[in-house]
Image (cartoon, one colour):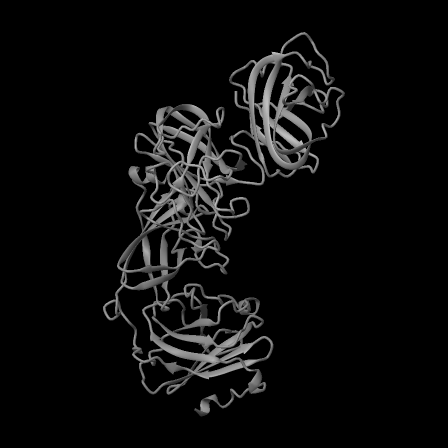
Amino acid sequence: MGVFCHWSSVISAENEPTGACSFLGVKKTDRVGKTKPEPDGVPDAVFSLTFSTPLADKRIEEIEIMASNPSKSWTSHLEGHNSDYLGIALAKNPSDILNRKEGELKSCPLTDQNLLLFVTDDGQFSKQDRKYQVRVMFTDGTVFNKQAQVESGVSPTAETSGQAVYPVRMSAYSKGISNYDAVGFGKKIEGDNKPDGLFELKLETKDREISAIEIRNIDGEKAVWDTVPISHNPPIGVALKNEPTRLINEPDGSFKLRIKDKVDLNLYVADNGAIEGGKTDFRVNVAFSDGQIYWTKAEKSPLTDKESSEETATNEGGGTKVNFLGEWLGFFPTDAVGPYPEIKPDGKPDSVFGLDIDVNPKNTITGIEINSVTGVVRKWGTFGTADGAWGLAVAYQRAPTALLNKPDGSISIPIEGRTQFYLYAYDPGDLARTNQNLRIIIRLADGSYYQQMVKKGLATTSTVAPEVETGPKAKGLITCEFRGFLADLVNTSTRPGKDGYLDGTFIMKLQVEDKKLQRVDLLGPDGVVRWSSEPKAPEMFLGVALYPKIYQLINAKGGPLNTLVTGRRTIYLYAADNGLLSDPKSKLTVNAVFGDKTSLSTEVVK
């Protein structure tokens, strides 16, 4: 072993990291080339490197492998060396080479103590008496030296699919642009309001665990996506094909999946134009937890009509047209449901979701469900929509306490045009603070279903109307209904006073905790304030009264309302008609502004 004599310790042994290194053999994988981190058509020899001491405060400067009989060397840092290239990856994410560029290792903390080392087979790894020594140099000057042990039972020659214990058969298809929005360009798994590109992966093997997936272009426009949290590439949303609405990724984008026999996956990616352009070919790389990596070219196979219908959130084709928005609103003083599949109370206030939906032509809603697409599995649904789901109660927003569910919890709600609903669900205790992504699914009588991510913010709005606010949204609940022309308390000026004409009357309901209501605005269809309790020309005066004194304005002298709201409060609003109130088609929005500069807004129900 004289070839290793120059690898003497540069620091005392007691300060050196400890661990072990093993030669795993030459695999079928082709992750690196002889002189660069790109496949070269030659199988890789793979080493495992495991540190037994914590390395959270260390960063790697360089890793070298030296071989004897015959002599050869590989290094992770090619500059100034005559050695071949050595690629480094975390064992849990073997598809992502950490040192694709010079100097990258220095900025990469060791988040895991288990590494895999890849080198191109030089044709000499089959020699049984060949020895390997690994040296790891850290940026703080410490050095780790270890002779690599050959794992028992490891074949030093390249494995083929026929030689592997369980062969891997895989095929992939590029399906084009779907109408599903699961991911964006950020690492966090969440939609970006743009349809995703869809790849389908079919994989057959036995008793293997997928640890990572990568999709990259072969030609054409550059594009790379993966499930590796520490990479700089956009994420891949992974779902079982038979459950296309539920992603199986962790919140950071990573995922692991044990395959017993075979699996069909949907892979969703945010398109940078390469997919929609149609001139780029792709390959799908699949890494397994044993260090092996397999890849296949993605054949182009456009979505069929059936697949497009299953993936879509808004059907743009002929027949039924559906647009909707689902949003988590907060809590409501009703108690309609609990942690059971049937519709029955549990003694606690319900969590409430808003559903604003437009369906044409006439159809019937036969099921509504809400489920988590990341994190802890959560499911709520009307009877018959999802196995194991907690019950979901449904009511029109104009009649929030009149449930539309049948005695068994199912629904059959005729719908034509735009309608707004409240959906009451049991709160497991963290809906107000969790960042978990939820999806709402609407099922219609014709067998179609439509899905969208649930919108969630600090404030509430149950409609798709533009939101206008003066500051951050408040935590709470707001509803507003137009009740017709009932009293004469205001006029078309900026000052309080009667004008001999009946005013448009609104009933606004607020639910907040210990906030001072300072101002209320009514906005027209264009999002511009038309009435305000504290108006500035050309805005008109908006009268505000507190129930039960509904004809006694609290702002008769003008100025800020300065009214404390604790819990639920019913408030009457009076506005002089400028033509918008008497027009049944005009869409109005109410905005309540509080003393802490937060606000709540919602569209007015006429």
